Image 1 (cartoon, one colour):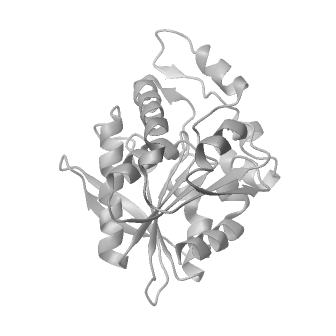
Image 2 (image 1 turned 90 degrees about the vertical axis):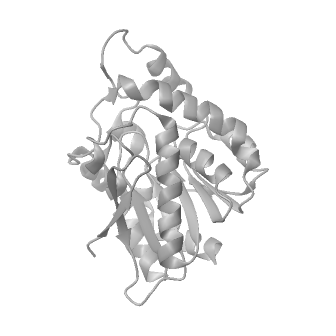
Length: 259
C-alpha cells in the first residue's frame, strides 16, 4: 500500500503533507502518529497498513526539520510542533469524524502538549514514550560538545533501537533519518519534555501506554509510575523500535482501544 499525501497548511502559511494509510471503503476513525527524535513519518508505514485492515486511517506527519520537511521554517520552536499536531488532528477529524493521537518515542512530549490543548481528542496512546531516560542516554547528552552545531545521537540506533536483524537493516538503510542532532533542536526538545511531564495529568482523553520490555532508552520504572494514573499501561515484548518490530500486534491493540 502506498501512502496518500494529504496537504496541510500551517499557521504560518507554509505547507506540510501528511502520510495517510486508510481503508479504501472509509474509516471508522483516524489516528495521528508522531515520530521520535531521529525518525520520521515513514516509520509508521507497516503499522498504518495493519490499522487500515482494522478500518482505521493512520495519518503521520514529519516534524519540522525532519524527514520530508527538513527545510520547513520554525523547526526550533516547540510551539510550532504543537500547533502542527493540532492542525493534523483537525484534518483527521474533518476527514474521518474522530481523531486519536499516537505518540512514539520523542513524539510523546509535543504529543502531550497538543493533547492537553485539544478538547475533542478521542484517544491518546503512548508507545515507548521518552519522559525518563536510561542513565547511559542522559550521560551521553550531558557530554555533548560545546559550540558544535551537529551533535552525536545520544543513542546507538542499531544497538539501542532493536535486536532484530531486519529492523536494524531498515534503520541502517534509512536515508531520511537523522545522522546527528542539530543543536537548534536541543532547547525546544528539553523544554517540550519539561512542560509535557507537568501537563500529563491535564489530559482528559482515555489513555493507553505501551512500554517496551527490552527498552534501553526509556527508563520504564518512573515512566510507568507517571502514566499508570492516566490509564492502562501495557508491557510489549519489544525493544524501543516497537513500531517496526510489532506493527501488527500494536495495530490490533490500538484498534480495540479506539473502538
